[in-house]
Structure formats: C-alpha cells, structure tokens
Amino acid sequence: MAVPVRLPTVLRPAAGGQSVVAIEGETIGEVLGSLQAEYPAMSGQLLTNEGVLHRFVNVYVNDDDVRYLDKLDTPVSDADTVSIIPAVAGGAA
Image (cartoon, rainbow, N blue to C red):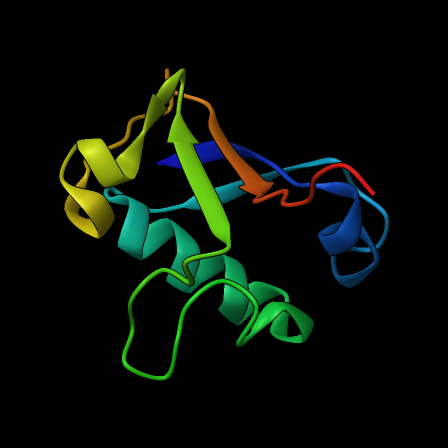
C-alpha cells in the first residue's frame, strides 16, 4: 500500500523536486526505508547508521509525532499522511 509522504523543501531536490511522494510501507520504519531506497540521495538524512530517526528530523502521521507513538514501528495506511519536518532551532540574535 502506498502512503503519501510530504517532503520538506530541503529533501525535495533528492526526489526530483516533488513535494509529495507515494511510498510503500506498513510502518514508519518501512516507509522511511522505502523512501531512501527509491531516492538514494536521502540516505543518511533521515535515519542514523544505527537505524534510528535523526534527532533533527520530525516525522508525523497525520498530526501525531511518531516519537510519542510507536516510533519507527508506528503503523500507517494509505488513509494516513506522513509528513517529514526538519527541526528548527534558533533564538534572538
């Protein structure tokens, strides 16, 4: 089953400029693995070498942060939307 994945601007060049891609997978881990397999330029930008989500990458299923669900084991369906959002840091200058 293909799940729509919304990509942040920084990852779009690796996906041919697309803002949304349809990716196969039944869990967030499978979706991210398939995303990196289909778009190899994203490898290393989402998951660490140990296979965990980088701390500066936030992944949501609909409106829920997967870190507060089942992390990479969070189930998804074609009725869900996965959004990848880079963490933003900063403050007053």
